[in-house]
Length: 292
Image (cartoon, rainbow, N blue to C red; front, side, top):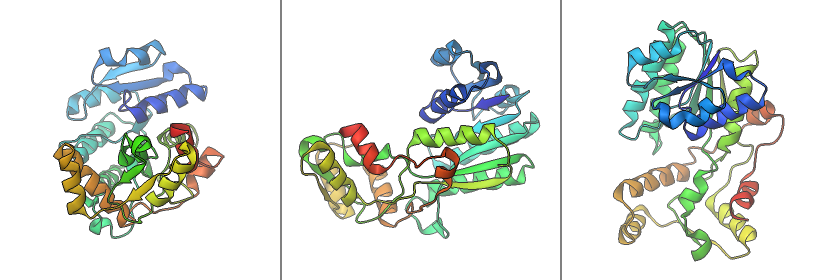
C-alpha cells in the first residue's frame, strides 16, 4: 500500500492523480490528511483517508500502520524552516515505528557549499531531513526537485501582461525551472517501479534561463514588449512597500531573487527526462500555456 502525505496540497493531489492514471488500484492508495472534510474529493475517488498531522507523532504512527511505501511531500510550514525539518523527522521516526518499508522524499536542489546561498536556511531543512532519512535504516529515495515553473508568474507579478514590466531583483541569474506536475509524475513513476532504493536524484530541467529570457518569452507569447528590470535590494524594497506589498512577501521576493542571482538553482540534469521518457516542459512551453 502506498500513502501520500500532503494529499490535499498541490503536489500531493497531483501525485494521487498520477497513481490513479498509472492503473494503481485505488484501494491500495492512502492519503494523509489533517481534515477529512477537506478531502472529500479524494474519498470520492476511492482513496483511503488517514488522519494525521506532521506535529502529532501518535497520529502519524496510527496513519502509517500497514503502509509499504510512503511519499513524503515536504511540509509548507511558513512559521520557520526549523519547523519543517522537525516535522519531517517526526514523519520519518513514526514511519520507522510503524514499519514502513520505503520513503520517497521530495527534497530541493542545492549546490556544494550551499551554506552561502540566500536560501541556505530553507535548503538546510531539507539537508537535515535527508540525513535523518539516511540514518533511519528505512529504504529511501530522495528527489532533489528543482524550482517550480509555477513560480515564474509569482515572481513576474500578476499584472505583468498589463504593465509589460517585470520588476524582480534576480539580476542575470539562471535557474532550471521545472513543472510541478511533472515532478509529481516522476515521484509516482519511482514509487511504482524498482531499482530506486537508496538513490538520490536531482530532478531539474535540461535548460536554465534568466528573467531576461523569461521576459523575451513573454513578449513573444503575448505579442507585447515585456521588459525585465532588476533593481538593487533597497530600491526593490522601497518600490514594493510604496505599492502596498506586505513585508512578509517583500522579504520572500528578496530572498528568492538573491538566490536566483547567485545561480543557486542553476543545475541542469537529464534524470527527469529519463524518468518521464520525454523532455520536460520548457520555460517557453510553460509561458505559452499560461499566458499565450
